[in-house]
Image (tube, rainbow, N blue to C red; front, side, top):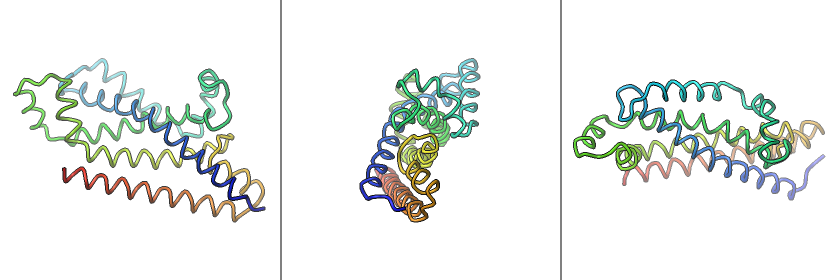
Length: 216
């Protein structure tokens, strides 16, 4: 059985919708947690062992849970937030909780690459911790953060495909419902090709933006 072009396009839109919304909210969470993990660690500008010892294991716990298990485990929480555990919008809740901690580690790694001499120079000029973060730390790590965001976006695309296993919509749902369950190899092939092209486009855009940022 072959699926219609309209169904494929609708599934593609659902995938883009899930990725965009999840990346927005997950990105905010990830940047906040990533910055917090860096500045509160030992020897940094806002060293705080208590905060670090709380945030670090929480991030590790969420990162260690496979997404397909997370989808099922937080069904009651998803229902509380959006009123249902099935559908494209419902899938956004676990996607945010999945990508936020994952992206925070990428942000952490990017910020740790910043030369300590820059931070010391900022301190010598009398910059406050907040000024150091927004005027020195983040701008210096900007090109690396672009690649981190690109990686997180591609990871989200893979997660949305898995969300189709519980009726989350998108290309993953089409591949499972119309491809696997109805033994349609062409449907699976079409969804795989679209996902591959989508990932390639995002990676290329991310690479170009990173190169542009490095030249700035």
